[in-house]
Image (cartoon, rainbow, N blue to C red; front, side):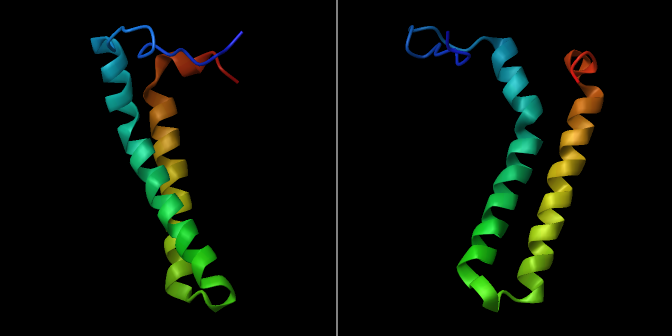
Length: 82
């Protein structure tokens, strides 16, 4: 049994609720993309990574945590999840 629902394969369009859910999660998606960019910069620089690059990565990590926490606090469905 797959946990991934492939609505596009079945020809169904996303519902308004689906789109609203994606829109609500967009700040977290954006923060994670910024973190990915920062991680790539650190990996690319290797041992020569500047302090600026490592600070950018740390800030991006904190931002992902902050946005994730905000999203969890306002999401009523996550209250029952551990």
